[in-house]
Image (cartoon, rainbow, N blue to C red; front, side):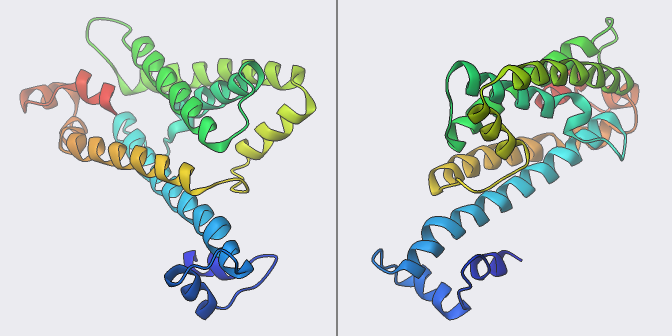
Length: 221
């Protein structure tokens, strides 16, 4: 599919020309420009985004012990969306790269908020409380995002709509590079906590007995 994405589009380019553009780039060649400046960055961003979503979903399922869990269930997606629309309205953010930073900040703050809310008492976090806290926070943040959207200028709404629908239209190599670094760091953290997540799947008490730290593991997750 990734290879096909480099050949298919409003203008079809055969595989030989794609390989030529990758190996012998000529900025004066229109086909090379299409491949290197448009299709390659979009394909890289799509691959990295899919990898990030897959890892995030696996971590959420491990944390909540729910095979149907995903980042949206814990308010992560809603936090990212709210941060992006605030950036577009208040700071006039228009580039995909800037969206990435605002989305990271919003998702991180939402995750921290869910973690704090989930600590209902001294016994620490509980997967059920995390899910309930995430669902409630997601509804609240989505409502606030809707208020911003309804009162935003048309051009801001269009920009947010493209971002929310997962459009790769304006993705460039710079955004792909930043995303690659972020995804690499995220995967590294996931590898560090995967053993603790497996232990905590047996239960918090047994996990503590086996040396896992539920609080630090859930916080990193």
